[in-house]
Length: 166
Image (cartoon, rainbow, N blue to C red):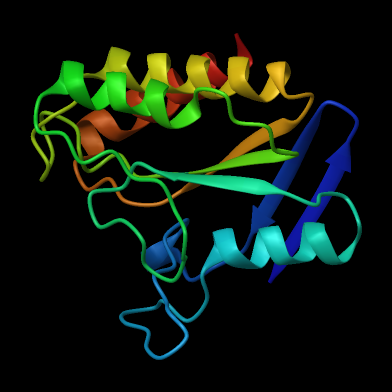
């Protein structure tokens, strides 16, 4: 089940999924796997558009397994953390959309499968997204995607949220 709540300064997307896959729903139009039957990002954007709350959106997918079920997403592909964060800035430069959605995967962390980003990089990404959203008069939100090292996952999520709140 999904509920989308709109407020003048932010959007909140609440999802209710099987506990084994809380936050992570990898699905495409032709397949799904594990407990993944729906793509939360795609559903959220469709609902917001159908309700007339947005016309345009950008999806920034920072999950290691990017693009599952979304088309025309933007995913940094660099293999150095400095270049990765710089590429996020390049993707966001000049963007004029009603909403930026982050498919917020944390499996690119140095202590997770991707082995690339530090916790402070998620803060930087969140800050860049929030600044871009403000500059375009739009909003932003994130949906939890990957992140398999539970020792660092909470710190990474908090860093992104702090960046989005800055």
